[in-house]
Image (cartoon, rainbow, N blue to C red; front, side, top):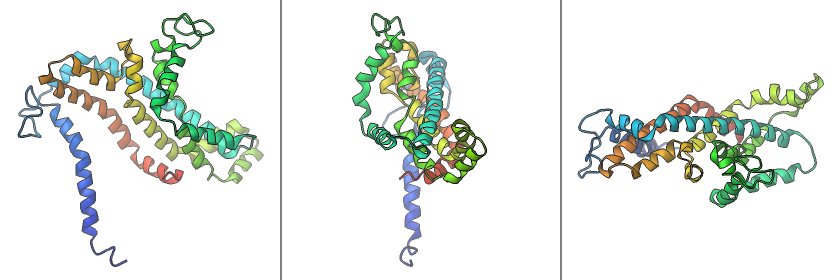
Length: 291
């Protein structure tokens, strides 16, 4: 014990250096968003711009149509987050507290889906969206249409509406809930729906917020699938895709500061949401038993 307490300054130094290493890229992004033409990437490197102005932000709004991109990002992210929270809590409750045949097999199957690389599912998922029955002019067999669901924001929401990780996380927490509490609700006349909504859900608040944060951040920053879907319809682009494509249309000498301005705008909602719910995130990770 004495040996551990002999050099506490070393632990503090590691934490400080780690904090600086994580903050510096974000600080550089913010400072670069105010730089003028020719200031970004020059040697010797200068962190601060020669003057602070909002020209890059005005240019980002005019070139990118940021309001449309922001609206698409909000619609997709909020829809996916709500869907994941509802489906994960319901499935987690069923797998943790209900007794039915095949429960263990279903849970193992859900765990197996977490082992698949996301890129492996891109083409099958795209074909499913493309041939979705009675969507985008398709017939009942999913043929003859002009794109199925790939012509709407539904294609950005539906593939992520259910999360294997979310079900696993909620199930791990709900297993620890005392059965006596659920039995008491049953004796009082509550059915399964009422038990889940009135008894179980209030108990899962920290874990639900943790899952919501993880889902929100992951969906907000999702790029590959959105780029694939929006390649034929730019109106479906979200902020990450629109900002990245900005580099193809502007003068390279001016591109990066404007891109940085777009990235700052894109990062702010995620940062605000995380800071608001940070304490619940830490508590939820601890309570869920997630390692």
